[in-house]
Amino acid sequence: MAPPQTFSLLAFTFSLLAISSTVGGYNITKILASYPDYSSFNSYLSQTKLAEEINTYPTITLLALNNDAMASFAGKRPLSVVKKALSLLTLLDYYDPESLHQISEGTTLSVTLYNNTAGNAPEYLGYVNITDLYGGQVAFGSAVSGSKLDSYFTKSIKQIPYDISVVEIDAPIIAPGILAASPANITVLLENAGCKTFAKMLAKSGVIKKYESVIKNGLTVFAPSDEAFKAKGVPDLTKLTRDEVVSLVEYHALAHYKPKGSLKSNKNKISTLATTGAGKFDLTTSTSGDEVVLHTGIASSRLVHTVLDATPVVIFTVDNVLLPTELFGKSHSPAPAPVLSPAPALSPAGGAPPAAASPSEPPTDESPGSFHSYSPTGLANSKSANAAVAMSSPSLFTALVTLVTIAMFQLVETF
Image (cartoon, rainbow, N blue to C red):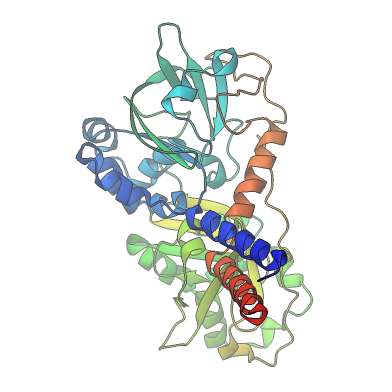
């Protein structure tokens, strides 16, 4: 008979397999496809690529708008504005109808997906105020001080406890400035983001014109910081020919819109603006929790900050210059690989939440009605947990299969 240790290993391994099968197991597009009243909302999630981002989170509450509400809001607004609004309707906490009506102190804050893509947003712009009103109504509004609570919970749509909850609200949440279209002056944005060296290369080489020519169909930019150009291992770029400089700058951009969520789920080689044929000037990606790393074949570079995410343009800063093998060869001494630090706490810019707990002033108490705290500590723990769960699925699967194989060999040898 097999020793107890073998059966324990098998039980533990199959438990991990069961758990892993639930991580990222939902597809928001497929869920909403079963509800025709939200077809417009679902379509906009796909067009803005928010659906890809949503599917990477283990815990989400989606405040959905029906077709009439979406038609009234979206209208002729640019897609970049619609994306910001829908990001604010994506809570990184789990709230089902029952927990919405059991909020401690009657009000709480919840961090949203907009907080992750807003860059240097004003204080609390990426948070939503949820208040359980007298008479059984639940209201939502921006957490920015002075904002109104003018969106109301109307009904439940779908819950997968405690991973995803989809509920309907009657109107979008309008935060200050969210309806304004984002500026698209690439060089100014890069300079303000601490990428002046790259901005100068972009202008001097003339590649800025190529960037601008593809914006209509989509543009993704990976801009190295000024510090990245000074890092050890970066070759002397002054020795490059003009054509090589053009290729290098083109290598730092894609001719399509690929926000962080798309990069996190990417499994294939990515063609850049410099790509001239199959396998030429390509990039590959990998993820660790919420981190995205770009690989050139020589060195790696980590996405550090989202400068702009305004469909169809997204601009990231990266911590290393992207060095293509076509220009520098595999024998080049690479820059140090980025150290993937733990995911940062999703704490608001201004420090601790304000003391008042009213529709116009964000509350301070943690709410047991939410399964995650909005406090700086709680948000950090929630984000760390999300990052830990959202590990690379292929890597997790490989490790679990290895455990199963070992356990089976032990079982066979016993008999």
